[in-house]
Length: 185
Image (cartoon, rainbow, N blue to C red; front, side, top):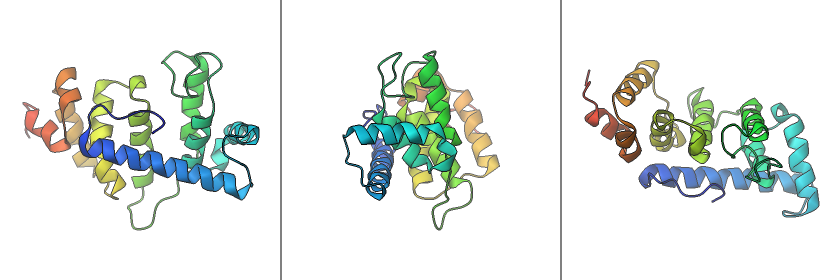
């Protein structure tokens, strides 16, 4: 897995592994369309080309391109370096310019939610404990095609806001977050 295991473990970690595998498969299929060999200088050039206009490509291809490049400033995987690294901050934004193509049989908006949640989980050090908790714990249901309603998302956010950073980092499910919250509407 490119970005390491999710410390939270459980179903969110399994979902993240599946997303990482999907990014890798999308990238390899993309390479094959151009008859480019993985690990070659041509692969690096193609990854750089993708990032010149990420809006032309599906988000998994853009994330696959980022995985192939190294930041010249901080030496991390491009887009995954520390907050404040100018090149990584910029590249992290590129991923959100990519196209989202809804998967069959999922509600509109699920693909966007899945992309955001996976970006947070894959580069968790770039986000707050509150963002990590909600997005990481939501990954399994998003991956299965669910999408919370606005009211459900707002209720979860309110519950998350009631917990300490330690409670957020140790939560194992969205139900666990709600149970731990002193505010149970």
